[in-house]
Image 1 (tube, rainbow, N blue to C red):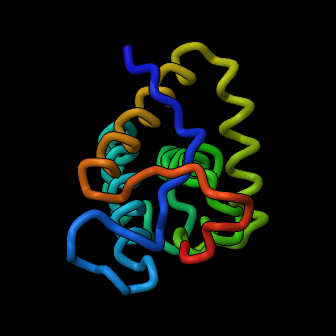
Image 2: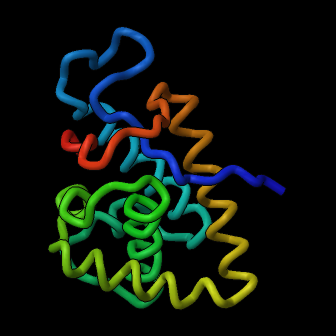
Length: 143
C-alpha cells in the first residue's frame, strides 16, 4: 500500500524541464487539474468533460468533482479560492465539497480509495515535473 502523504504542495511557479518555464505556473495548474481529473474520473467512472461541466450533474459526477476539489485543497494545500478558480466554482462550494468528503473519510473503503488517489495524483504530478515542495504560507499564488 502506498503511504505517501500530500502534506506538501506543488510549486506552481517552476517546473522541471524547459517547457512552460516563465508561464506564471499556468502549465503546472493545467497539469494538476488534468492529473486530478484523470485519476478521479477513472476511480469514479466519470468523464473529464462531466467533471468540468458548469452544472452539478448526477450524484456520482458531483461526488467525483468534490473528491477532486478535496484533493486539490487538502491534499495539495491549495487555497479554497485557488481550487474554485480551477474547477469553475465559488470558494464556498469548494469548502462544502471538502466538508462532504472529510465526513465520508470515516468510511474505511472510501478512505482507502482516497488515500490511493492521493498517491496516484502525487506520483503523476512528480512524473510530469510538477515537483512538490514545502512552501511558506501563501507561497502558492499562481494556482
